[in-house]
Image 1 (tube, rainbow, N blue to C red):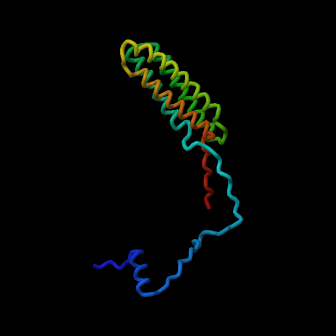
Image 2: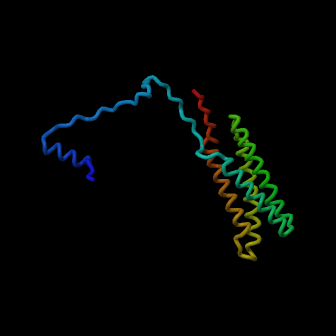
Image 3: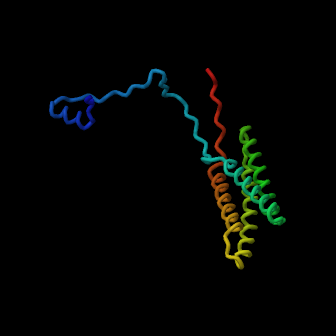
Length: 175
């Protein structure tokens, strides 16, 4: 079976050799699309590409679960103080931010609160890492938690500097 097609280069060389001039194809709008030159375009609102709660809820859940596991295995109150409490706070703030965002209101206070808790966690974990690292030279768990908290602070800063969470998408009306 032979293919019956030509590449754009073949068609150009064939028309040049034959001495035939081709007209430029006209661009035609689809039949179901109306052309409205006076259509108003709403200005695009400046916002972040990802919501604060998309990473805040998993981060809070991770801190909470690791703090709880640390407390259950080693029975240290430090795990409750540095893991469970801030993890639960960030998790709750992330969920509240999601609920407020769904209602169409600004979740800026929740973003700021999550960033503040992440900053406190980063500060305390950096202190614990520098104290513990003087004797053990281990990165886990304090150095890892400090780095993760600093990364979350950078993320919250991005969300704030980008203009906050993207607005909720409007539900399309059924026709």
